[in-house]
Length: 352
Ligand SMILES: Cc1cc2nc3c(=O)[nH]c(=O)nc-3n(C[C@H](O)[C@H](O)[C@H](O)COP(=O)(O)OP(=O)(O)OC[C@H]3O[C@@H](n4cnc5c(N)ncnc54)[C@H](O)[C@@H]3O)c2cc1C
Figure 1 (cartoon, helix red, strand yellow):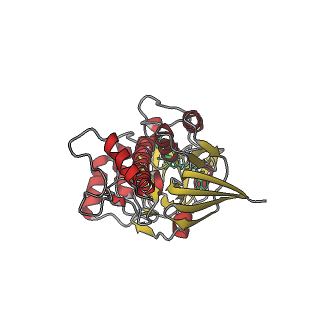
Figure 2 (figure 1 turned 45 degrees about the vertical axis):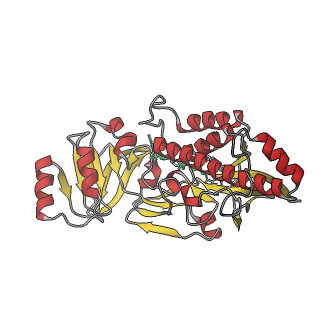
Figure 3 (figure 1 turned 45 degrees about the horizontal axis):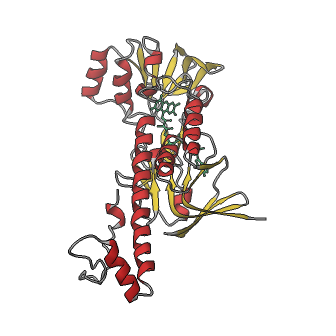
C-alpha cells in the first residue's frame, strides 16, 4: 500500500547542501522531509579539508552530525532514493519506494557524479591516490611523485597547481591538447617532465597508485595521479519537473542563480547539483541560502493566504476587529490600497 506524507518542503539529497538547507528551514519551524540515499560525493575520502573548524573530519561523520542537527529541529530524514518527481508549485510529489511525499516546495541537493577517464586503475584508486582537487587533497600528497593525466585543456592548469605542492610532477598528455610554444616554455620553466604517448593503465596496489604505464609498456613510478572527471549533476528529478539541464565546459548541471532559484517555480537547487565547483563549505553555504530563500517564499505565501482567508466573508465585525488591532491614525488596513488591498507579494526571484 502506498503511504502519503505531507510537508512544507522536501529536500532530495542530504549531503552538506541538503542538510544545511534542512537546518535553516527546521530552525524556522518549517515542516521538512529530507530524502537521502547516503552516498555523498566524497564518501571515499579519509577526511574533509578546507572546512573551517572541522578540518580532517571524516565525510560520513560530518553528515551524521548534520543529520542529527537537522533532526534536533524536527526535520524528518528518510534514508531512501527518490525515484520520481512531478507536480507544480504548492503541489509537488516526490516518489520514494511506496511513499508519496507531497510538498509545497522542492529543494534538489542531489550532488553530482564524477565521470572518470576510462583508464584501468583510475576507478580503483579514486578518492585515495587518484585525485582531482588540490584543495581537497593536495596537501596530503605534497612532495610526492605526482602524475597529471591529461584529459582536456584544463590539464595544464592542474599541472601548475600541483607543481606548487611538489617538485616531482609529470604531465602525461594522454587526451589533453598539444601544448602551445608558450606552454612548452612554461612547463620547462616549472621543471615538469612531459610524456606524450597515451597512457595504457595505472599500476595500483589496493588503492595505492604505484606507476603509470604508457602504451609501449614503459612504467613511470608515481605516488598519486591527478585526473579531471567530467562533472555530471544528477538532474533526472529536475527534468521530470520540467527543468532543463545545462552543459558547461566541465560537465552538466541544473541552472540556477546565486540563490539557487531554478527556472521551475517552487524548485530550488543547492550544492554541486547547481554549482559543479562548489566544495563542502560552499555547498553548505548555498544550502543555508536556499533554506532561507524557501522559508521567505513560504512566509510570503502564508501571509497572502492568511489575508485572503481573513477577508472572506468581509463583514462589519471583521472591519471593526481590524480597526481595533491597529494602533495608528491609519487604522484601515483593508481596502485602502490601489491594488484592491492585496499586500504586495515579492516575485519568486526576489525572495530571500
Ligand atoms: C574524492 C573527493 C574528495 C573531496 N574532498 C573534499 C574536501 O576535502 N573538501 C571539500 O571542501 N570538498 C571536497 N570534495 C567535494 C565535496 O565532495 C562536495 O563539495 C560536496 O560533497 C558537495 O555537497 P552536496 O551536498 O552538493 O552533494 P553530496 O555531498 O554529493 O550529497 C548529495 C547527496 O544526495 C544523495 N542523492 C542523490 N540523488 C538522490 C536521490 N535521487 N534520492 C535520494 N538521495 C539522493 C546522495 O546519496 C548524497 O548523499 C571532494 C570530492 C571528492 C570527489
